Amino acid sequence: MKSPFVPFKPVTPPGGGSGASSDDREAVAGPAAGPEVRLWLRLGTVHALLDSHLRARLRQEHAVTSARYHAMSLLDTCRDGMTMGEMSRRLMVSNGNITALVERLVRDGMATRTPLANDRRTHVVRLTPAGREAVQVMERSHADWLAAAMGALGQDEVTALLALLDRLKRSVRQGIDGWSAGEQENAPS
Image (tube, rainbow, N blue to C red; front, side, top):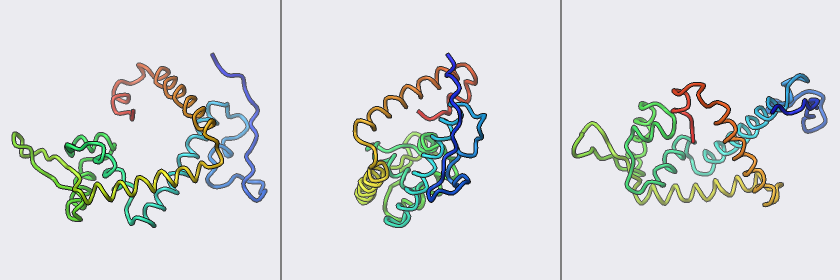
């Protein structure tokens, strides 16, 4: 069932200016944008704001790129290691990007890369103890930064928002079901 049209109210940027702030995608949508479009734009804006902030903090406080952090964090979840192909799929980046990233991790003593005994072309990547320790420090910082950024929300609001976003994710999956099997196979979980 379609939601009733809700009149668009432009978002006033901080400082009371009349135009849309450069990071507010919703405000530039126009008065004809329906609630679904505004929700999609708002989710994108929140993601862009947080992503930009987290990238800057990782760079400033830990001297790492977001890609390196995400690769190390992924490897931290898999104690037995992971093939470079699996890393590429899970991080949704090219094999070439993973190869270069893993080479730097190995060079810096953060990871090892070992060929499989039955297929020397395939390598398993594992964090070293130093890599595991480094990423766990970064993960604590990352969680603290997110908590601070979302600090205006109470725990009940965060829980309610998570429940709504879970329903939204299921609704989107149901709404796109059958549209393109190839696209869905590559979609993040």
